[in-house]
Image (cartoon, rainbow, N blue to C red; front, side):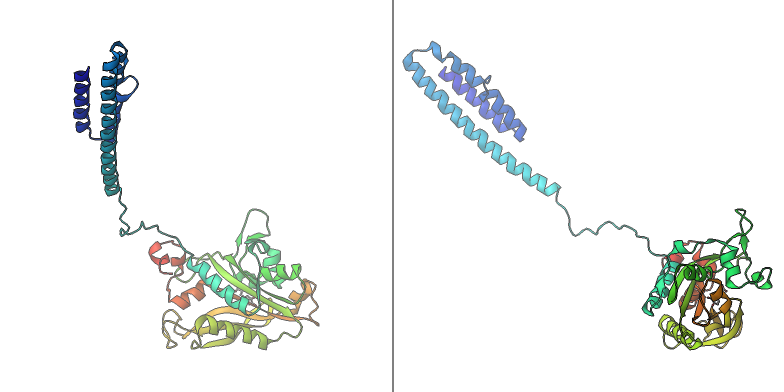
Length: 344
Ligand code: DAH
């Protein structure tokens, strides 16, 4: 039995020497030391021995078992360290690798221009009217009638309007001036609001005109508002938006809903005033219409023109953006060519 034990130990040692992984070590452990393992089957035969031999062989069996346990543990630890080092090596993260690039969208130049202009007027004390309060699908009533356009007045031809099939008087608004009426219906003076939004005109599309574009409407109604206030606010806006050095001029004009009316030009950004194709040789570019709110408009919404007065203005967003960034074709805003959009 002694020889048998020695032999088993020898086999176990050989098996263990061949073990290449922790798994192999476990297999060796199972084969020799588990309940059904080879040592146990030997130990079962101990009962057949004399007491003297039992003691000797038993002691030897225990010693060999302990030796085997020790080498198993040593081998296990050795392989564990080896496997761990391999794992650390192969799963190493190179923190110097560049990160993955995730392309990001950004705000459309029209939106950013609207935001910029809105912020300027907010700084001057105007508050923003929410889009829902002044719809793009509008009635002639708000777009024309209440703005003092007499029925069938040729002034309606100033803006070629899109009519809808919803009802004879339902149109796509041709100007954000409709927001003036909606604001004055909702609120008593003092009123100091701006209302940006999209407008539609049935026009042939070219580099300077699109059949939809954006405007920002402004309205200030209170006691003792004068044309001086109008000039002050608009000049301040131009100074902030274009910078100190861009000359501007007020020119007399006509709109049915303002009296007197004016248009404001800034010096051409392309030629600097000497005259070019962009400014049709005049050296000036129109950026907005404005004027003192016509007393008829105030009366229409129940505001007493003997007590209150006001001014209004409406500016083209694309125009202002084109002038600031020297963009020479309005269609660029709407073609969604990322090479263009990315630049803003
Ligand atoms: N609604 C006019 C247009 O689209 C622009 C305009 C002119 C707006 C004078 C105003 C204004 O508020 O007072 O041509």
